[in-house]
Amino acid sequence: MKTLLKNSLVLHRAVVAVLSAATLTSACVVQPVYRAPPPPPPRVYYPPPPPPPPPAYSPAVEVEVRATEPPPPLPDYEQPPCPQDGYLWTPGYWHWTGSDYYWVPGTWVQPPQVGFLWTPGYWGFVGGVYGWHVGYWGPHVGFYGGVNYGYGYVGVGFAGGHWAGNSFAYNTSVVNVNTTVIHNTYNQTVVNNVTVNKVSYNGGAGGVAAAPTPQERAAAQEQHVAPTPMQQQHVQEAIRNPALAARANGGHPSIAATPRPAAFNAPGVVGARGAAMPPPRAAGAPGTGQPNPPRTAPNGAVHPQVVPGQPGAPKPPPKKAPPKREPEHEHGR
Image (cartoon, rainbow, N blue to C red; front, top):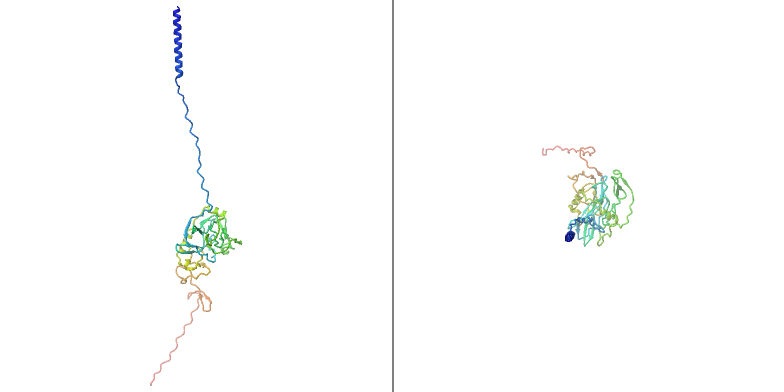
């Protein structure tokens, strides 16, 4: 009996030992642990770099032409009357062809759109050369070198008129307008605070010392329109005319201003003061579109050109009868 109990006790201890070992073994087994992947890093928005700050002054266009000698002084001339309502004045200037300066006459131009004003081009001396900054159309008048072109362009801005809605109002104290034809006018005296001279370029020896105003800097950044096709044709006509070369006219062109672009032979063309008269053209020549000029009598009286047979034409003098011949007498009878 004791032996049986002893064996049972041994067996019980063995079972307990086995179970304890199994428990320890199971405890040592590494259980797999599931872990979620780490979240992606947050997306960071990097804005594009800001544009570089604008320069102190950026011209509306690049320099178009360069010359090694300064342009001649501006000629003195009268402004022809405005040919049509809505036309704007564009002053004349000297254009460099590579060997000489040619005068591009001032003229009245139809703007490319309502509300635009003309900023004249100008010569500027930079880096040892004279560069031509071409003019442009825009909502405001920009920098044109401080050059006093006259007729509203006194060096800064434009005093010859302004847009009033869809119509242009002309300042008759500055520009030449026939008020019987163009009625949208006003009269306002303009006080010039600049030195009146005929200098035609900015900078350099003897040039105008002017820098753009804040308003002109702002105008340089606005929308611009290049010269119209008629303005470009106007320039081409000028450089084809040898009489407009500075060496030929001594700085006093015979065609200083025209009523319309490229109308160099039209009525109303104005020559510069001190200019030689243009070569005469045949009266009523084809292509001029002008009638025969009036006749001048020896006493200075002017008679209109008339055609015989038309009303008002002078009657021809009566024909004289031929003298009577005496009958011949026979001699020697």
